[in-house]
Image (cartoon, rainbow, N blue to C red; front, side, top):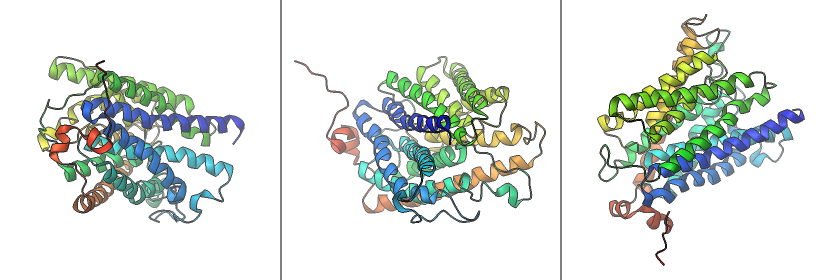
Length: 402
C-alpha cells in the first residue's frame, strides 16, 4: 500500500471502531434508565473480548485455503506473531467488523441478560459463527466462490457485510430472544426509550462511522469506487429516514425522532452489501424501501410473540435481507432488471439463507446450553429492580440532592 492507502485504511478502521460505542449509545438510549449501563456494557464487553480473540486466532480463521473449507486454521499464525505490516493493517480493519457484529446481537436481550453469560455467548458465537462466515464471504470460502462453482462469470455480491454482519447478527438475535424469553410486562408500548437524545447521538455516530464501514475496503482497490460507495452511503441512509417516517405518519399520525434514527440505520444496513454495485438512483430506492419495510417489520415481534427488545431482527436481519436480495434485481450489469439474468438473484438468496440458517441454529444451541448451565437471564425481581445495580453495581444517572 502507498502512503495514502495506508492512511485511509487506518482512518477507516478507527471510524468502524467508533461505531461500536455508537451502537452502545443508540441501544443505551432505547432501554430503561435502570438498564442503560448494562446495555452499553454489552457493547464495550464485545469490544474488549472480540478484539483479543480476533488477534489470537480469529483473523486466521477468516480466510480459507480451499473454497469448501469451514474456516482457516486458528493456529496458523497464533497472535499474529509472524504477520507483516500489510497483513496487520488488514487484520485491524477486519477486527472492527467482528466487534460490531457481535455488539449488534446484544440489542435483542436488553434489560434481562447476565453480563458474564453474554460474554461467554459472544466468545463462542464469534468463534463458531462470525469468524467462519467472514471466511465464507470475504476470505475465499463457498459464498465467494458460489458463482464459479455454478459456471458463472460473477458471484455473490456482499461488499461490506449484508450477510456476514447484518443477517448473521439478526439471526443470532432472534435465537437469543427465543432462548431468554420475554421481558416482564412485555407488550406494545410498555417499554419506552429513556433518553431519546442518546438514541439520536448513537445514530449520528453510526452514520459517521459507516463511511469507514462501506468505503473502508476501497484501500484494497485503489479507491476506484470510493465516490459511488460514499454517495450511496449518504443517499440510501437519507432515503431510509424518509421511508420510515412516511410509514410512521400513516400508521400512527406522528413522525418520531426514534423513527428517524431507526430509518437511518435501516438504510445503512440495506446499502451495506450493495454500496459498490448500485447506481445512486437505485441506491435511493433501496433506502426508501428498507426504511418503509423495516418500520413495518419491527411490529412482527408483537404478532409472533418473541421479545427482540431493540429490533435487531426487524432492522438488521430484515434490512440485511432486503439489501442482499435487492442486488439480484438491480446490481449493475448482473441484476435481473439491469442487464443480467435470474442467476444473480439465485446467488444472493442462497447466500442469505445459508448464513441466516447457520447463524440461527448455532446461536440457538449456544444460548440454550448457557441458559441450562450457568443461566443467561437475571431473576425477574432483579429485572424489575434494575439490572444496572444488580449486575454492575452502578447507576446510569445519579442526581445529587444536596
